[in-house]
Image 1: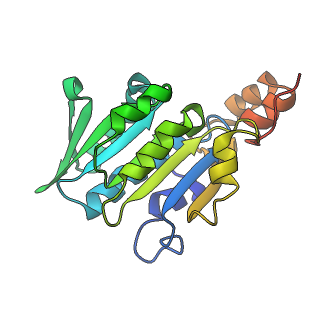
Image 2 (image 1 turned 90 degrees about the horizontal axis):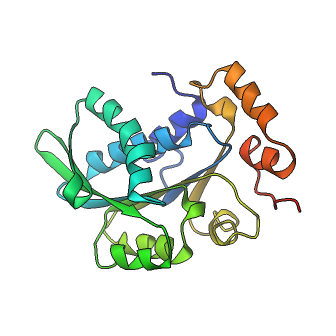
Image 3 (image 1 turned 120 degrees about the vertical axis):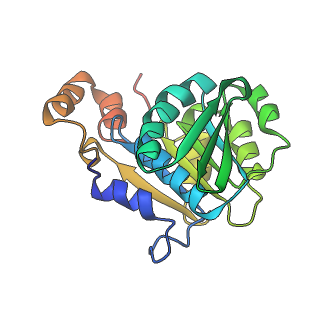
Length: 224
């Protein structure tokens, strides 16, 4: 499978020798269909399995169903191709991933509304991945970050842009440096799996502010 230069940076930012290793979190934001989710998911699992054993991690999306569809279904075949064993326990909403004697548990959470923060409260995490973060309530995102208290824990964010008045833009994107957040902006050209024909179709599909959001990946207010 081919990866773009930006995707490779996401895949390796946590590794020894990387110039980005000092960051505590990473945010991949920008255009739709730009390859953010796949590389953040693969990077997150590889990082977790390389440095932890018998620890708990969180995979978060707007709903548990969207986590399974957008993240788990895309990343698991790649992990198995790399030699990892992954067992999904649907009744517990978790994945148990192992390699050799090393084994970790990845719990699935949905950040649908303000009540969702209570679902993740109490768990101790070594790391978390929040996919489509801008669609989740602030209380859930902040509670998830607060759960990451294991030494060496890190956080992965990915999202498409919303309004520049959005709380996540104000509190995380604009304050990336002070929060130790590596911010990477993605466009459709960063996804080598997207053909020029499909890219042109997306470019013709949107206009105005939504073109700037979904195609250019800019945080702009909707018109009207």
